[in-house]
Image 1 (cartoon, helix red, strand yellow):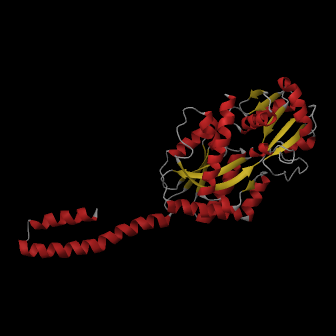
Image 2 (cartoon, helix red, strand yellow):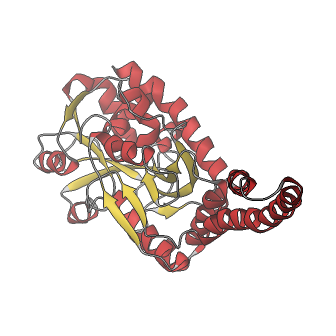
Image 3 (cartoon, one colour):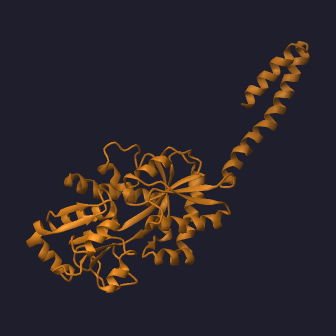
Length: 349
């Protein structure tokens, strides 16, 4: 751009100044323009990255419905980012198709750091679940870091024959054709949990797909379903009231509110502890490294912050160690989870 300005300027004065004088003028003017304009261009670009995120508000897309556990976790991080960057941070819920609708919106967004995505394990399962996926979980995004993980629970209605996981395994192997396993639809956490459970036990159950976990929960409470997997928050009250029977916690960590329920590893089925719902933060591909680094450092600070940790724990979730809140850790997690879930999902189709 600067060189073009010099050339245009020189052509203009060429018509009006004698040749010898013009040559001297060209040299002097060229030097002056190069000295003054080039640093301005450089400093403008540097200032653009250094100023982030002062230009405008940051939007974090939660590709799920408002009020869901993923949405609540997103809002905890958004509030921390607001204070950390001293900038407005809003959460936009764009649900649909297991989180793929909102993810595709972010994949097409400008790579300027002002539109981010907080998604969960669904990023790893989408390639196997959706044939015409409009984005590539690895190639369409810049990973920022791992944020949090939420356990899942395997439970039954209160009159189910098994009272613990050992009894459940024995009963399921003998009566697999009689058991109904409810889920919140294809691609949901409950669906993935059911697939993983079937693989771990070596059986095939009747899966009943609902348009949401709350509908499946109603039928479980009524005894029309035998088994179900779901995140803890909506289940705790029913468990304490004795209307649901908890059999296992999946995710490797006992619940703080009901610590008596064993984890899958403790019950001898470590594979089932892969069923934690982990969350990562992403930006569109092409976002400058300097901006990704700022967002990652802020995420690490969030995962060390006592207030963030406390709020996440209230949702029966846990933040990742701050050392894992970086692009490489999220990239590795995503790749390994795609490798885990793809054969499980395709084997079920």
